[in-house]
Amino acid sequence: MRLQRICDGLSAEKIDGFLRKWLRLLPHPFTGADRKAGYRYDISILQAEFSLTQVLDRPVHGRLFFEQVIRENLDLGRPQEVRLIFNRTITRRTPGQFRTRIVTQDVTPSLNVYYKNTRIKQYHKEDRALRTETTINNSYDFGIGKRLHNLPKLREIGFAANRRLLEVERLSHDCILAEDTFQAINSPVAAGRQRASGLRFADPRVHALWHAIILFRQLAEGFRAADLRHHLAALSGRDPDAISQGAITYQLRRLRLHGLIERLPNSFRYRVTEFGFRAALFFTRLYNRLLRPGLAAALPHLRAVDAPLKRAFDKINTQVQAWIDQAQFAA
View 1: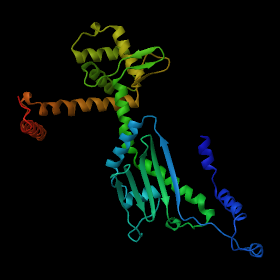
View 2: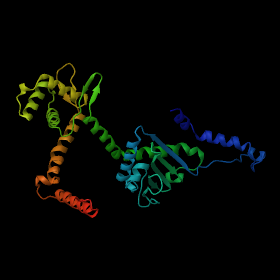
View 3: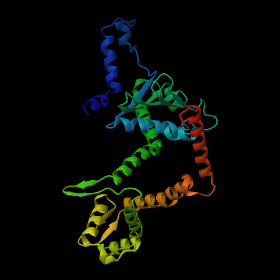
View 4: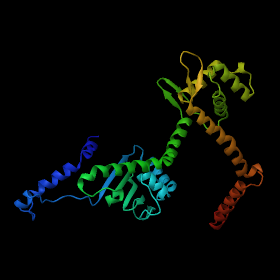
């Protein structure tokens, strides 16, 4: 934070003061009379670079994120995307080429986006940080002069471009966050002295809980423990009295600690959270509409009907077997 404050304190006035200090010590063509008459050196901005370095607490996830960024954002150089990043109006008469360039050979992979003479470069720095750099090579691209006093305006443009690029890439980042969320739901959770097991994907008992969450989301006044008992009993074909109160209490604590439900104040009722409803929809739809029919098409011993997915798996199996035969690995 201290280093960041020092960097933020770099201003046009400090740069100009540094120049004047050395001009007083170094020889130059202006005589004392020239200086009194107002002749002096001025500073122009030939190139300005504004960078944002985000150090990652989990470098491996950072690399996964950046690889996902490259795959998902190859179209960032299109005019409609560049317009969002630089907040500029782009027409057919706008000069310059708008393109995305991915550099991978013999260097650290980097993503480059161009607008006129300006470039944004993004790369995974030293396998520990995500580095985003906006380099402005001609301030006139943004209708700003080159004299030093224009530095604050260029800073605003450069850092805003860095932030907008990250916003455009947010979808790729959300994929990494979704992985964390998926693992958290499937893993045990603890809050103080209370602990509960994870909600393992495709577990029949957990699947019943997901169905209950979707159903109870429709109840404006929330649901009670008895409602959960009757629902779980109906799905499992059991008598509600056969499910103990302790088992229901544990399931409620399990859902609550995972943030899927919340207890209403001063009552014994519970309400499904927004996160819980979305997670329940995702897990149930994924299981019912993708996993079960997908396995039926993929596994050969199920005698699945001929479908594109089955033919694709059969083709993969044939090619793998041919490679094994060619390598003479067959028994």
